[in-house]
Image 1 (cartoon, rainbow, N blue to C red):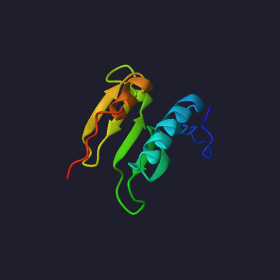
Image 2: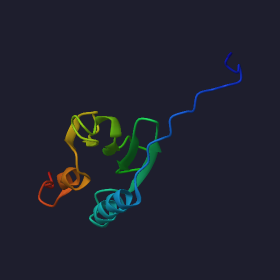
Image 3: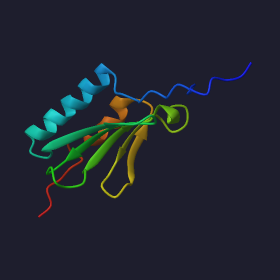
Image 4: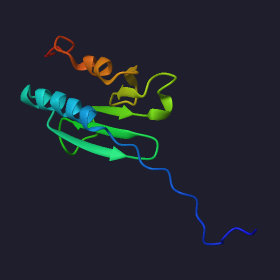
Length: 111
């Protein structure tokens, strides 16, 4: 039996945030906007990751990227926070644990 020349294997579906995850991230975003730390955000999705990028100004590169990579769930954890230089600042299996990186007291104003 020959394969149909028109046949294409199904494409992998992009990764998305679940409603509860997205709600938790937006809650953090709202708190940081109210504190004057963040001003804009962007969302991107690929077949490997879903990324929530945070900006101080819209024209800059992101301050932080909150990434969900399900392929890493069993190893380092699906969630990570990546800083401006591409350095992984926090990684873990649970979103709440990873978002504690932004808890009050971690940031200080420097003159």
